[in-house]
Image 1: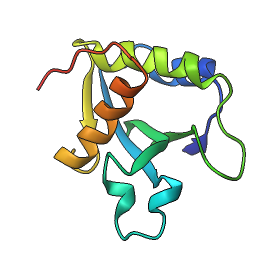
Image 2: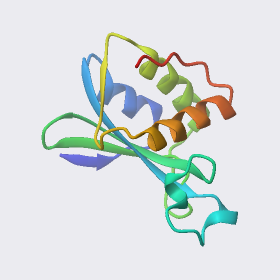
Image 3: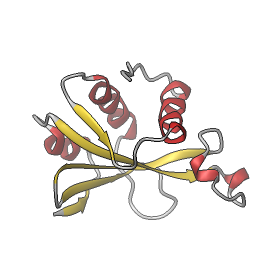
Image 4: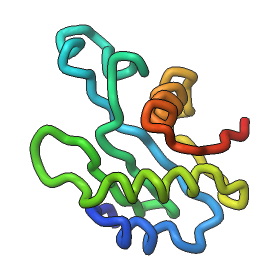
Length: 123
């Protein structure tokens, strides 16, 4: 079943104890680049607006973080702190749904670095 979640507790409940997790980043262009084609794919011209996770076929959650309309997650700072630890954990296999392109990877890394998130990246 697929559903939208809005809290850190819901995210933790969904990911708790999982050893393999697929994820996908949703991005949106920054205001000054909205008229440019594919600006949402450029780490320097976009920002992360949501992340989807799946731990099994036919099952997934979407966590809206910075959408212009609709309800976004509560306490995004706490969610990013949790995600930094989650992505740094070598005991969990993270699977990008795309494959993770260099561009998508740098969108995530740029966000982490911009907001002083501490994360270890294993390639």
